[in-house]
Each structure stands twice: as C-alpha cells, then as structure tokens.
Image 1 (cartoon, rainbow, N blue to C red):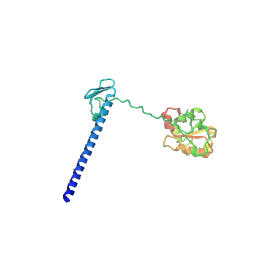
Image 2: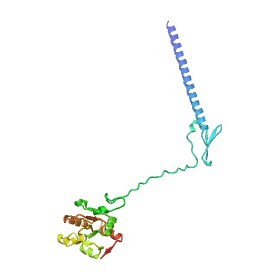
Image 3: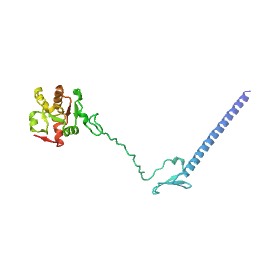
Image 4: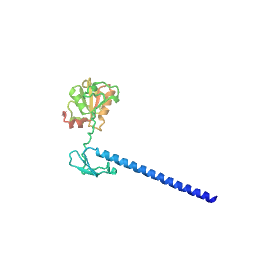
Length: 233
C-alpha cells in the first residue's frame, strides 16, 4: 500500500513538472511573437517616413537641402535616436516687450494735458507735485507765478525769469504785500531741487493764508538750469 502511494506521488510530481514546462514554453512563444510583431510594425513605419531611402539593412535620412545625411540601421532600438552632424537652426520666437507710459498725475490725460493743475485744491495733501514738463507748461501758459523759496541772497544771484522771492522766513505781512501778483494765479514754489523742502514749507504757508491754486516744482532750480530754461539776475 505504501509503495502504491509513493508511486502515485511521483507521478503527480512528474505531471506538475510537465505542465510547468508547457506553460513556460507558451509564455516564451507569446513573448517572441509579440516582439516580432513590434519589429515588423516599426519596419513598416520607418519605410513610410518622408525623405528616407530604405534598403535591406538600413535607411538614410536627409534634411530638406539634401546636404546632411544620416544612415540608420533598421532596428527598433535605434528609432527616435537620430542626430544630424550639424546643429539645426531654430528661429527664436519674438519676445513681447510691454510699453509703459508714465503719467505724472493720475488726472493727466494721455496727451499730457496739464489743465488739471488749474483746479483749486481743498487740503495741503492735494497740493500738486510737478516735474519739469508740467512746470514749463505752467510757465508758458502765463497763468502761473513762480515763487523762489530759497534765501534772498540766492534769489538775487539768479532765479527763474519772472519769479518772485518768498523765503521760508517771510512774514504774512510781506506775503500780503505781494497779493496783487499772486491773486488769480497758479502759485508754483521751487527751491534747489530734489531733497530740498523749502518749497514745501512755503506752499503750506500760502495754503494757510487762503491760496488754493498751488503746485510744488520739486525739480527746482537745478532741473530748470539743466534744461536751459529762462533765468535772470
């Protein structure tokens, strides 16, 4: 009885081994068939490529002018690994450079019309801060009076043509003596230039005295001279 059981087990083991071998052979055949199918498909795709000359063992790729050639063996592993001997010229895409137009004051229109400067202000915070082009516009308009906030000594040496002297230490009485020149005008204060605050102080004093058409030319005397605009002694 024991011998019979051992014999049966041996037969089962042999059968398992045979089945395993058959399964392995089936998998091997399937893999080989699949790889062969891929190779045939790649061969067909390669033969359809433009500018290609297919031979039995390789194909040749040329550029449009025909001056550069590359021979590639017919092998799926080499597909997509094609390099020419000289670099390909690529035209760069044009870059976009935004054009930004800077306007000195948000109320100024796109034509640099500075007519907003003729509007009366309601607080010291609204006093206009202007640059050289707006200052020249007011100067040429004939509706502005330029006020030199530097010392009287500096004013006497040289100043913007037609300007009057009101230094920071000027008294209200002295300013009232000039009311006929200031009345109905845009009062443009200036001093040495950027970093000088004498013109700010004089503009605040004028506001406290009731004037409501005021601008500070913060480019001042230095910027006016830089542009060679009219001066006098």
